[in-house]
Length: 261
Image 1 (cartoon, helix red, strand yellow):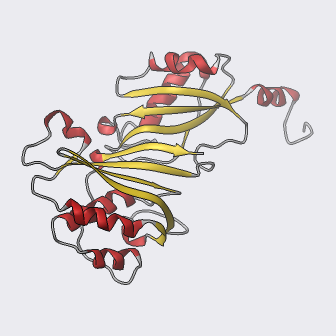
Image 2 (cartoon, rainbow, N blue to C red; image 1 turned 90 degrees about the vertical axis):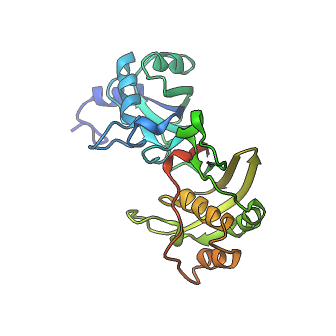
Image 3 (cartoon, one colour; image 1 turned 180 degrees about the vertical axis):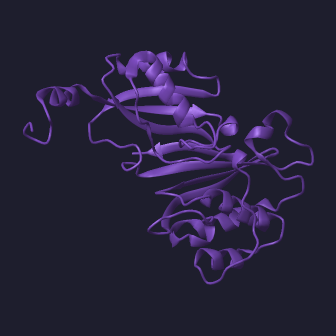
């Protein structure tokens, strides 16, 4: 065997020729089963991998910063892949977009070091949840927000968001079906932004559990409609008690805005 665990010199040269490329992606999640490849549907990852192959990049394994569920959108998903493609990184977005459907766009590409991993090197993320608070349905915006047609007390909601800031065990805000070593996460900042009928929940942190942002959003809506008070939310955050019912809002209102490295 060739020294270093390789069978021959050609394998070593192939490794040297490989590039590690980081890309940034926007996508509308409505038509996909999520970011990550699955057996039961078409994933965003699958579509981009095929586009890379179609421009001569070979079969690649695209590593995303993390999975987004079916229906969740992204304004700033990040991913990386290794390839021997010679095309300059600056030309990759246009080449890939020519082979992608209209609801997926690659808007940035750069060469990164061989050790970079979009998932494991991520230091944090920013999410936005969109609520349409009007008696009339959102129409054109229906695929991008949760419609709540009754009045919400946004003053109480603004007071309550402060409870989430800091390092806490967020196990009460994780849906079942997730296998994680720790449910402790740090939220750096969270705020409520109100613009006419739109209410945005803008949250940044070092990591998020399965459905954590959608459950926080549901909790805040329950505060706004008078079903929860701030003390009950504190109990949830500090794990003093558990509540049987608060809403996990639909995926379509959630956007992955940015991944921090």
